[in-house]
Amino acid sequence: MYLKSIEIQGFKSFANKISLKFHKGITGIVGPNGSGKSNVADAVRWVLGEQSAKQLRGSKMEDVIFSGTESRKPLGFAYVAITLDNSDHKLAIAYDEVTVARRVYRSGESEYLINGSACRLKDVQELFFDTGIGKEGYSIIGQGQIDKILSGKPEERRELFDEAAGIVKFKKRKQAAQKNLEAEKQNLCRVNDILSELE
Ligand code: ATP
Image 1 (cartoon, rainbow, N blue to C red):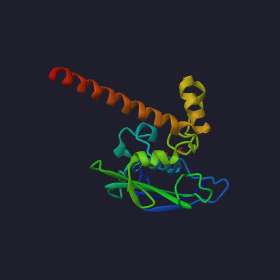
Image 2: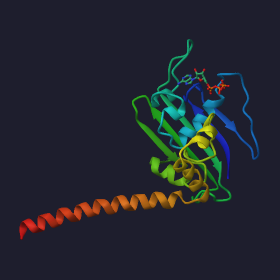
Image 3: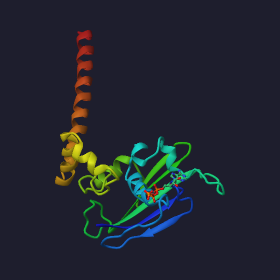
């Protein structure tokens, strides 16, 4: 599995639609300071479901939408799509190529798409669990992140190892099952209360 291309429109400094093609192996992105190199990495992080504006170097989510320049008006939406080669089927989906897209409007309305079909954030997250690619994965190492990992809490470091070991999806499913169990316990309590009132 590898990143084949990325399409960006209206995201941060990229007002016009651009498409970057990648090949197997190492690709370097070079350019002057402030030309948008880190914005490309932010775009990948964002399309994978990043919900924290701070992680995207902004103060609110709207900051990802092109805010205009002296010669160009701000845009009303941001769109990013990444296409991954999945011929080795590392992603549990029956396609050799997977495109994940995210769009957000200034109104706050947003959508995720997997191969053109609308889906939930949860579906995008589940697709990438244990692949190292998700927004919590180790495939995007931001500036200063190595320091954060080294000086972070042991539990935070553990999350990285969990992802590499491929057990995140099981942990998430366990958490969801425990939540459901707790809700059912509450329901049972309520039913018992009603029954004892009726008796
Ligand atoms: P450096 O080499 O200094 O790290 P860089 O090439 O990584 O720089 P980025 O940090 O990716 O550059 O891009 C910064 C530029 O993106 C700034 O000029 C900033 O004004 C612009 N930018 C960020 N958000 C937006 C936005 N919402 N609308 C328009 N431009 C934006």
